Length: 193
Image (cartoon, rainbow, N blue to C red; front, top):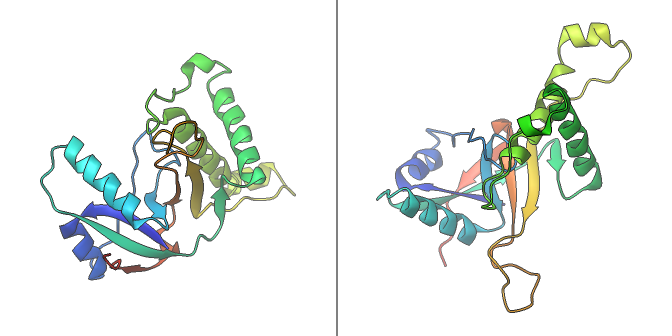
């Protein structure tokens, strides 16, 4: 189960089946572009949206929407093969910039600002999309085409130590970025506790 924080009006439209969540396309999105969910953490989704709205000085009432997601073909950054794919995508992004590291986006000093990570993950998606094109297939007979990822999943450590000397942080979490909205099988209203 996954959870997304939003404003109450949007949540009600989604729960009524009248709308879908919007994809995020910020250059700093740490898992690339898509719809972001907190895995198994409605409280973290609530905390995040409250902080975001406060920072933006929004007065909207916040809400959390639950979702049942079939991850489909997932770029799982908790798996060695997913991480290896990112290394290859970084090399491709670097090559697209004539090998000039100075031309690449840079991750910010704040942990949420992941411009380079976003660019690398988006490059990986682009590389897979290219293999679907007929021109690429004609130029590369016998080479395997690569289907698009439906989701990206990653773990993040943030918030500072939970207690002095700990390597466990206060806001550790797993997020899922949905690129293909068809993998969202249902929305639901989380039970309040």
